Image 1 (cartoon, rainbow over the protein chains, first blue to last red):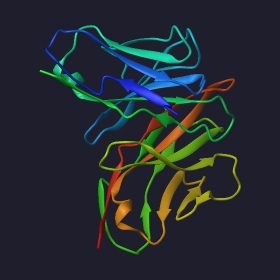
Image 2: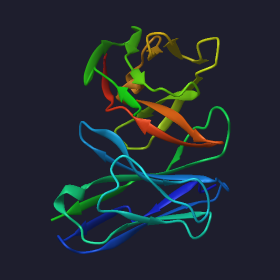
Image 3: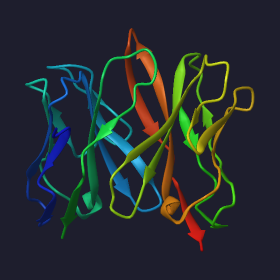
Image 4: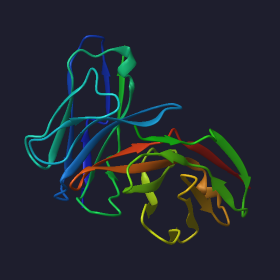
Length: 114
Length: 117
């Protein structure tokens, strides 16, 4: 049972390069989220999606774009990477529930921008 | 805007002692949910416990319990009989219901718990 899968697991970029992080879930979840984790900052919400074809901004959306063309996939794009985007990125998904809507997390992507 | 505050960047506790990790939150939404996650050094995020804003009783899951004080807007995690394997980062999180059943979840900055043998 794969759950939430993130690719790649590690990536090094030069300033100005672009890349796309892929998140795939096989649990038929409606909601999907992208977070970044920096030391001392906890997890901050970048963008999220409440269903196929929908996206919304989170706490720190600047410099990122997302797409949810298929229910099982949520893509995070960096058009022009900056050193400030060096971080660990987590994707998560959840069902629609009135209560106990816990998140299922991927294993994370370590991104370094030089 | 909603906010989660964890005021303890790090804690040291002797093995087998109980430990309380603090979490306060701020929201104007009457319907919300509170979560605790554990992140060991391996980096994975592990769900521990959940408390709904309308739940009358404090949530418990094995050695974990959530001390929910709604009027104070606090949701502290209590770990009884701590073990060496409890050493990890702990994050408090809150779900805010936006509309219908749509929601988003935000996290606090975390507390690093270290258990001494």
